[in-house]
Length: 604
Image (cartoon, rainbow, N blue to C red; front, side):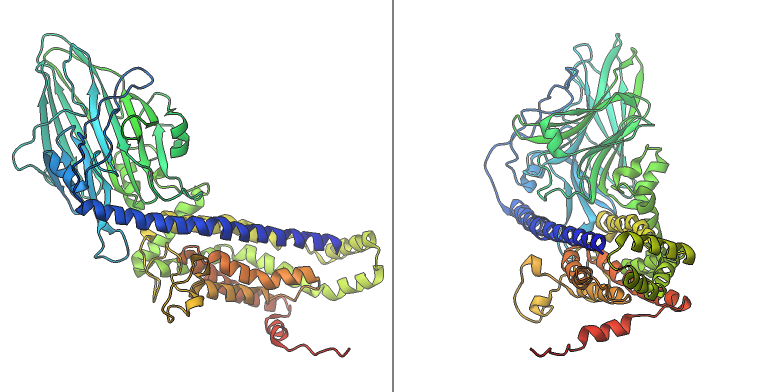
C-alpha cells in the first residue's frame, strides 16, 4: 500500500507540474501570440494607408559567402515604405491565377508580391487575403531572387539591381508564360521564361547565349530573404524557420531563426534537393537545378536592414563561344496543402518535399491519419465529422488491445474479494502479501500490468492527431457545427460569461468552453466506470483529474477536444460491453450515487 501511495503521489505531482506549465507558461504564450497577431494585422492595415517620405532604394548589394563569392545581399535599406508605395516604385509584370494575385518586380526579376486568393486572415471571408511575399523596402519584406555570379570576362550578370525587359502587356497566368530578357555589356543574352501552374509552383528557365569569341564561366545563385521572423513566439510542436534537403538522398535539415542568428549554417555541397523558409501554414522554397551541385546556406545579416536568408550557389558553368545553355529553377510560394505538396514531390521528383509539412516524430502515424481524415472529409464535407469517424476507426484498430485491457480490469475486479482476504490474512507482512498475490495472479492467469500497455500505445496516436489538427492547413478555419468555426482554434465560449450571454470578455485562462466541459464530463464518467479506489490519495487524484484536464485542454484546438470527448464516450461504451461479457460489475451508476449521496453527519 505504501508503494501504491508513493506511486499516486508521484502522479499527482506530475499533474500539478503539467497544470502549472499550462497556466504559467502555455496560456501566457498563447495570449502573447494573440496580441502579436492583432498587432501584426493592425500594422499591416496601417501600411496599406499611411504615406511616408523616408528614402529607401530597395536595392541589394551582394554579401560574401564563406567561399568569398557574392550571391546574397547586404547594405539593404531599412523597410520604410508602405507596401503600396514599394509596389508602385518599380516596373512590374502582373500575376493573376486562380490561386495567386501579385506581380514580378522587373528590378532583379524578384518574386516579391504574392497574395493567396484562397486564404483569409480570419474566418470571415470578407477579411483581407493572406499576403505571403512583399517587397524588400517594406517592414515585412519577403522575396525570392535568382541570379548569377560572374567575372570580368562575362561582363555584368543578372543580380539584385538588374532591370529586365518584359514584352508590352505581359501578364503571368496559368496559360500565359512570360519571357524576360537582359543583354549585358559583353553581348551575353539572358532570356528568362517564367511559368506558373494552377497553384503555387513557379518554373523559371534561363537560357544563356554566348555570342562572343571566348568561353564564359558563371555560377547561379538563388535566395529567399525575409526582413523579419514571425512575431508569434515559437511553439515546440511545430518547426518554423529554415529547412531543406541537400542531395537526392539527403535528410531533412531544420534550423531555427535563433540558432542561425548565432552563426550561419552551411549544408554540404550536393546535387539535387531544395531549400526554403517555412511558417506554420505557408512556405517559400527554391528547387535548384537538380543536375548541378550546389552549396546551401542559412544565414542572418545585420548590416543595413536585418534579414534572414536561405540561399544556394551552384558550381560554375562554362559556355563555349556561340553556344548556349539552360538552367531551370522552381519556386514554391504558397500554402502547404498536403495533397498539393505530395503531388509536387512526385511530379517533379523533388526529394522528400512532403517534409515541407512538419509531420513530427510520428510521421508514420501522423500522415496516414491525415489521409484517413481527408478521405472522410471528401465524403462528408466537414472535418469535425471526419475527426469523429477517424476516432471510430482508431478505436476499432485498437479494439483487440482494449479488449485485453478491460478484460484484465474485469479479472482484477473479480479477484478483489480474494485480495481483501489476503490483506486480512497477512496484515503487516508485506513480503508474504506480495508473494501470495503473485501466486494468485499466476493461478488465475492475470497480468496486473496488462491494462497499462494499450493506454501507452495510444499516446503516439493522440499526439499524431494533435499534430494533424495543429499543423495541417486543411484544419485552418475548418468549421464543425454550431459555434465552432475553426477546429484549429480553442473553443471560443466560456463558462464564466455564461457562454456569451453576459456582455463581457473573460481572461484567456478562464476560457473554459462548452466542448472542454463536455470532455471533462466524459472523463469523469469514464473514471467512475471503475470502483472508487480505497486509497484516499488515489481517490483524490481520480476525483480531481477530470477538472484539471478540463482546464488544461481548454486552450487546445477545438478539434482535439472534440476528439477526446468522443473517444471517452466510445471508451465508456466499449468498456461496458467488455466488462459485461466477462461478468464484471459495471460500477458507474453505483459510483454516481455515491458521489451525489449525502453523507450522514456523525454525532460528536
